[in-house]
Image 1 (tube, rainbow, N blue to C red):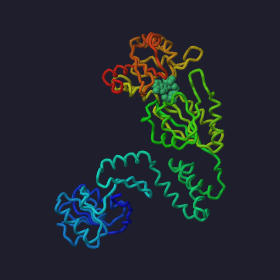
Image 2 (spheres, rainbow, N blue to C red; image 1 turned 90 degrees about the horizontal axis):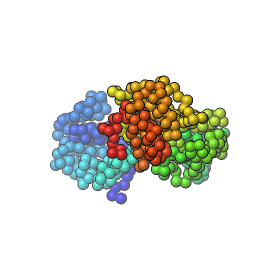
Image 3 (cartoon, protein in one colour; image 1 turned 60 degrees about the horizontal axis):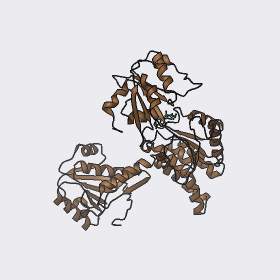
Image 4 (cartoon, rainbow, N blue to C red; image 1 turned 90 degrees about the vertical axis):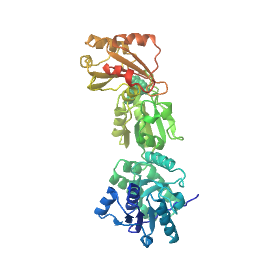
Length: 459
Ligand code: SAH
């Protein structure tokens, strides 16, 4: 380790920045975040620095740097484009034993400024010892995307309870157990969704031993259409946190790869006309597992509230007083159309878009065909492979032209993504003559033509 990471308290401490350009400005803003008292010495100042001085946030002194400027400073940053001057500042600060940083010149530094992930009071500093700052920034971006924004609030809350918890549990193991539970359970989840007061009450109840802490929680999570990169940050977080995951056929293997390694997995099927676990059974299972205190992730393809029966599942939870969260996902219509180069709306071709189910009941579809068979509209049929012939006939019977463009998307957004384009009147032939793999989505509308120009994914 070339440098020892430490965090310095700078509140109201005098810090000198030499240089008045944009880079100096960025360093000043960082120092101000730590409440430092900043003096900036330079011949000229950029607009940002001038504004800070006008707002009385910093002091600026317009002059050449001189040795006496470093007197009484606790920290010095040199950010000029004059290498000789930078070297002089570094030499003098080092001689006076004042920590000094020279931007982009590791050799002249006695400390370096890391890349920072700020979830104050939690702060993560990343350094490459000046060897690969871009890599450090990439790592920072990764951390930024995986750490919930509200971690800071969670740490703040923990800080408020620290003394109480210490007083209650004299053994460090007991304290650790208490905090581990708080940081990964219902309390943390409440903080993440902004219910701070409720989280506080829950934590207090856990501390007083009056909480119903045996109760688990259910996360109804939209896993998107297939490509795991389309998951939301929140979906990923809850998938990684759950003790048990109930999934079905529509959740892609790539998405399943991302659930917590040691989570128990339960397949609840949903093969067409061959439900491995009937819907009532799934609803009840969720209730039973949560009552056992487990954190259950009900992972569904696409969006749970779009033809996903998510509403039914949480209705049972609500009736049983089980806490739950719902995470929206990218629905198949959105994922499949985008990855096929077909915008669902377009100012010239389609001013509205309808998502409809093509599921056959008693051999027909109960749909308002009159409203569907119109121009300047896109219709997306879910679950419509078996009903393809029927929908083609019905739309034409209700006045839609037989040469309306149609796209049939197989396994959209996955490595096996495949698109067949045809015309409405030809759709039944296509389905009869080609081997088509589920899941499949059918898009009807003039926008399908745009694929010729806009296809980017399987081109
Ligand atoms: N809740 C899901 C839809 C469930 S209904 C969502 O929001 O996407 C199941 C239907 O979704 C399938 O019959 C198919 O029409 C469609 N579907 C889901 N994923 C798909 C995919 N990757 N490619 C094509 N169609 C898909």
